Image (cartoon, rainbow, N blue to C red; front, side, top):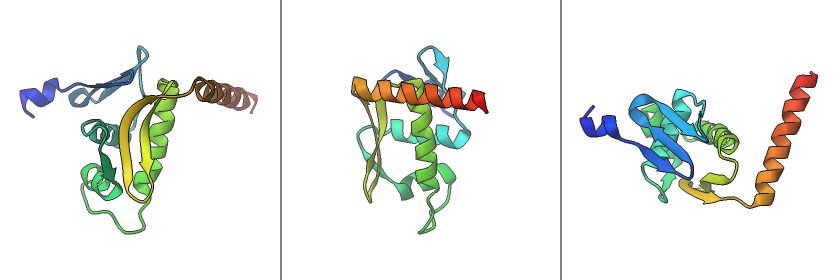
Length: 131
């Protein structure tokens, strides 16, 4: 790892990511990501506003070619989106380009959407506690 890599810091829309330290922070707290989610986030953040194909993301994050029917990238992007939405509810970070791939571009969300997500998260927490 070069000294440049060790100092690399990615910032966007309230996210602060240090790849060498495997840390992602937002709102003063750590965003709890699995290693694979973290790798996806870093790959997307390093190429903002660029549509990255599922195949590219798979090869970069899994280290091998993607099988034709493999949906792993989609599953992990969904999980990553959910965690980012909880950490920074007023931004959407990862955007889908149908049949192409995903693009990282932090964009403020509508206040109504943020409020609805917060309400859903609160209701889900109450439901989990009631079980």
